[in-house]
Every structure is written in C-alpha cells, then in structure tokens.
Image 1 (cartoon, rainbow, N blue to C red):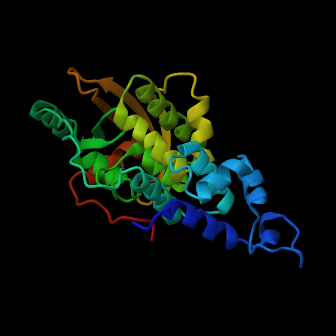
Image 2: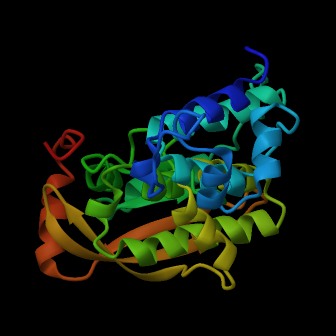
Length: 281
C-alpha cells in the first residue's frame, strides 16, 4: 500500500473540484487547483487543522462520521465511498487478511419452519440485519429489487446504499429510520458486527445514515406495515412481525404478511415458479 494513501486520495479529490461547483468564487489569485483546505473543511464541518493532519498522514484514524462528511462534501460516488472506507481500514491494518469468525447458522428446525411457512415471505436475520436464511416466498419478493445482490444480503446496507432502495420503499425515510435504530440498538448492546457496519455506513451512506443513527433514541419498530414497490407485484402493503428466536445468537424470524387478497394471490401463485430476474430493467 502507498504510504498515506488516504491523505493522497483526499487531497487529489479536493484539488479536482472546481470552486464554482462548490459555491466558492474562482479567480486568478488562487494558487491551489480546486478547493482550498479551508473551503473543504467548511463544507465538511471540520477544522482546517484536522483536515491538514488527514492529508499529511499525521492522523490516519478519522471517525466514520468525519469520513462521511468529507465524502458528502467531495461528492464521492458510491464506489469512491467504499474505496475511502477501505483506505482507512488498510491504514490501520484492517486491510490485512484475517479470518472472520464463522457466523452462527440457523438451526435445521428453524430452516424447516421457513419452508413450512410458504408462500408467506419469511427470513432469519441477525442483530446487524444480515439475511442468514430465507424461503422461496422472500426470495421472490426480495430478489427482483436487488436486496439479495450481496453476500450476505443485509437489510440496512440495502436501504442506505443500493440504488433501488428508494424506489422499492416509497416510505423510504421511515424504513431508513427503523434500520438505523436497529443498528444503534444492537451496537449499544455490544454487538461488534453491528457497530462495524454502522461505521461502514457512516462512510458509504454519509449523513443520510449518520444523522438517523445519532438521533435513534427509541427501539426500532419490530412490527408494522412496509410498503414495497415491486417490479412484478406493483405497490403492495406488507405487515411484518419480528420474532426473537431462542438461543444466544440474537437471531430473529422476520415474516411479511400480505394485508389484502390483491397482494396475497400473486405471492401465492409465484411461490411455485422460479424467481424473477434482478433489477428493474
């Protein structure tokens, strides 16, 4: 890894932004291409001194919130945000290959329960929102919108970083609040994986995530109704229930129940056919 790759990346991105594009005047007296440090610091809400330390490599451990604010100010793309997060992990040794502890798998009886619930969409999630197992009904619901694109799929990461999320959830703000609150509750109870995901989303999703995470003063809604806009089923209202499973793994059974026959009928019919393709195209 190049020494001070994080600082070099931040400086290169700062110098590539035209002052006028960020709302600052441009003129012949500028000795620095792009934005000055003070201008970027103002946009990100941090001090010039701290930004200087980051660019010069004297501080290589900024918080996720600071990185998210810088990513917002620099207008980074989703791919560049992920790269920024990886640069920080690499600078503190997190980029070294390490064997992650194996994830506890749902019990065979729990997997059998999922199958018995067909065609009702059902899944098993852990404290950070990873989808550990699901039945055909859920895969038919979640596959076409892209929720299952990652390995493992994660409910919070989809809501905050997937380009389909705001289309999938017409009430995106409320769903995002719930996902952030769930991560906050798990992290506050000492779940290291949830805390690590929150740190990641602080960078990759920026203030859309951090302000919700910081403001989470209540537990997430474990039951309610979610509205989905689906490429196959149209707009459907699904009542959901989160049920805690016995054991020490903090696993939950999440079940989606159609609120009317107009939704229930196509879900029941589709449970006997292969899942639709990914995406909205």
